[in-house]
Image 1 (spheres, rainbow, N blue to C red):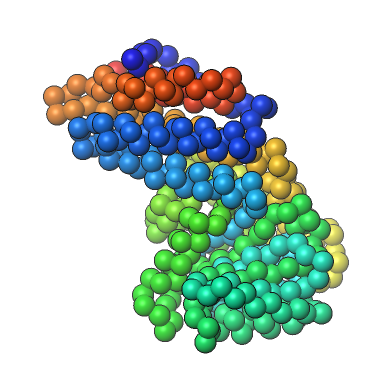
Image 2: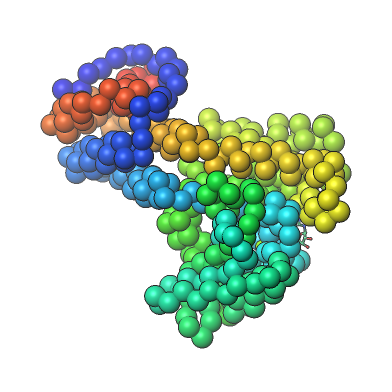
Length: 378
Ligand SMILES: Nc1nc2c(ncn2[C@@H]2O[C@H](COP(=O)(O)OP(=O)(O)OP(=O)(O)O)[C@@H](O)[C@H]2O)c(=O)[nH]1
Ligand SMILES: [Mg+2]
């Protein structure tokens, strides 16, 4: 039987102390089973549809957990031409990623640590993975430009992603940073929307976190918000505002005040940077200018993300947030006769979930959210 309570007290912190990746994966699988079985159990179409939504999110979370144990991919994502590649170059310290003043990056490019400079291409439908070795960043840049000019494909077929290895201290902890095609890019020689479809697929399949890049002068438009909500809201805790070279403290505060509300209960960290100035500062080895361009602070954040404990905590929080959203939806549901949902979970599935003998704080934290409660006023 589903216990009830009217307790809407704020959630306690999520504990991950006694949890590892395998434990988190197994708990996610259990939760997925509870949600899926309940989805099939409820007769009401709206309830089943909300549970179906939760199930799809859980599948995506599970995929990321499975992957996080192996590699953590932080993707730099945003509209086309907002300065993603420039920012990446500023972070990596060299002009690796092609950048120009028109739609440019056409394939996800992953940068990861390696002893020497190299480029490997992964195809959509071929097993071979050709690799080239290089001596200078300039040669890497040239190779990426040539691959990009094929608009995501070569004589060997469509490219799924490109991997660049480099001996960057920033990536030494195993973190992968990815440059991505801009969403909303003009389609060149391809079916409309295929760039975007490739980007969506990549975000769903390969990415564990998103750094969302917007341009200072453009702000955040409706289309960007829609794309974020649909494809990466759950994995985005960082908003990077680039092109901020002339912005003072008041400009930053105004931007924050204007957009913070649009994030609901999950406001990301705002990073105000100038990729262009950062790149110049790198070229001139000017540490002070690099700091002023906001790149040093962003590097610090990226290093923190590479910490295994933080990664595990963040994945657990994602699970907690999803249960919170689902609980909020279920508690606000009323049928055609204004009756609330008296039974949230399929009873035998709920009993099985409760019987899971894992004293982890995370399990308790999820339990507290999944218990039927009144979270909506009245
Ligand atoms: N003023 C200013 N211009 C910038 C900054 N970052 C990038 N730009 C310029 O914006 C243009 C686009 O930069 P890219 O880095 O190629 O943009 P992108 O988001 O990677 O573009 P796509 O790959 O096509 O999606 C270039 O002309 C850059 O010089 C910045 O911080 N300040
Ligand atoms: Mg680019």
